[in-house]
Length: 150
Image (tube, rainbow, N blue to C red; front, side, top):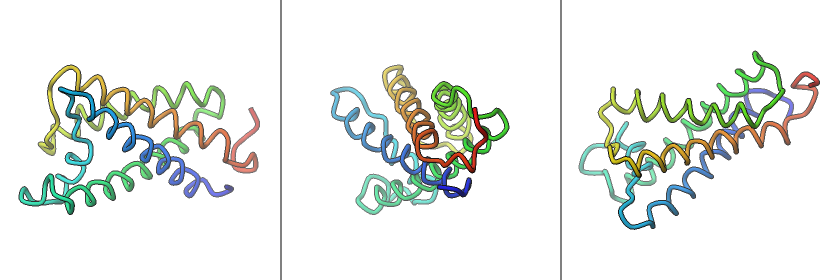
């Protein structure tokens, strides 16, 4: 991939898909309810649609869009900070995304995020996987003509 915008969007899309898969697996654990797609669909859906198939599909689409936007932000942050230690930066970006999205934006928009410690811990791990996946895709699939040599 030679275009930064497309590369960041695709990397964020890959990270979002990994997040959704991990969220599904985490919700199979008894006592854990991360509600990732429910929170994403609450941005535009009515209360009646939340938890339905329509709400879940809407949440999935919104989650992919938000992940693509974050992927573009991440690749431009890499342009500023250079392409060294990409996976470490992805790890830190995942933590930052968790803090900003779940800690600040979700509270401002009054999204249905659980306040249990175990749910927040798993959401942190899921967001770290997003950052690492996004960084991995950028590191391995973005051509050197786009990024500077290390």
